[in-house]
Length: 523
Image 1: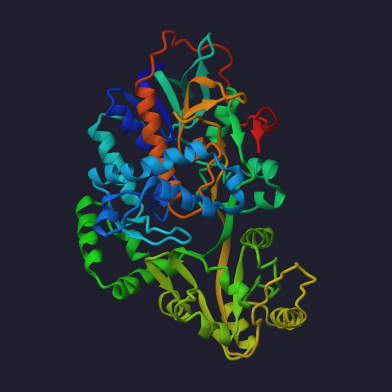
Image 2 (image 1 turned 180 degrees about the vertical axis):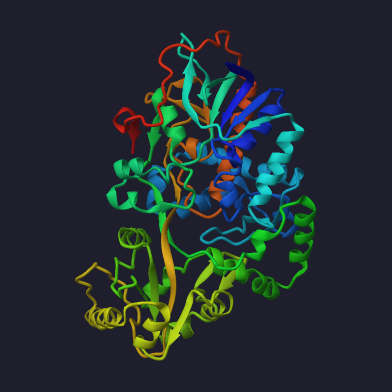
């Protein structure tokens, strides 16, 4: 049994849906295969920021920006990682991000912004309204309008090739889905693939759970099986987040209907900035963990036994230390830090340029995460931390801070350390990988390439699957690349020459459990 369309898209997240719409509006028939019961992917779970230059939002705000300014700021954000950057793909992103924001606006997506995003010189961050589900609602509606067929609960087991070695489709649920003009891999990253994390990053990273448990690296395995090359597989975004709130987040509960988005945009654009910040603090304290600046100022991170778990100088080490234990930890600090992080310019957590949350906001909005005690013993009792363990840890840390040396974990920034009470704790927090920056090698047309740079006939990739060496080290760039690359890939496949031979050839057994030593990696 088989089904045939012009373009086959594997993955129903932001990049895959953009690819499907782009192909359909270029005159192609399109089928999307999504392994989950619902479409959405990581895009639908994200904060939703989209960083772009040259938008109408910037123009209305009086911001005069350009592609070259955008690229220069990305260089600054990359720092030492600039040497690893895929400069060709970065220019593709910078040139197409602004038009893609306008395209999204044309299909009903509304944004708040632009807002500042340090170290960028220009305000470029566009924050979707009312939440990231608005992307998926708008894209799904446009797919229906353009006649795109979406098949859910359809995990692809293997790509199909003809006798000439061209990619002609994929097998899912015993059905061969064929694409006359080509196939697009848009299956997200590998942040939930323990074997890939273990092989390419290490055992400690393999224990850190993913924000999106469905990002199991399927596209990497599928592409690698036919000769694709994986780049920069050592790049993970590891950090800590607060446990979910007991009460639903009102921002996330807002329906992502265009009318609601338009109304919300009208409201938020007219609200005084101080009032808007107050409105958004409830969402901010639910979604985002504390800035690492609090550790540099003197805070420590402890597990429920009251013991430090890792070097607080490093988000990565903290995440791995927490994951290696019971995956629960608390930030502990004293009265001096509580005062310091109760007013600008020292927020506990931020939506850059939009909202800032301080210590007292956690007391108001997340009382389940906020703990206070006149003594360390009282704090421990309220937070559920072992009192004796916490007391020993604080005493030892005071000695380390005084000596400027941490013999346990090698911390180098001690700030003011832990001084007089009252004492505070925020938590519990859990370790997560939010994103992985590895991707299949692609050219500027988003064709998947072999080790020597030769395109694999019939195969394209978009989003995280086709990141191709891009760094994307600041907020709003992953969403930007998902949408931009999806649109480009969809258009290019739609105009590719159709394959004359659509007969599968060779072994068609599943490759989802493909041994990693069969996949080629370039760091």
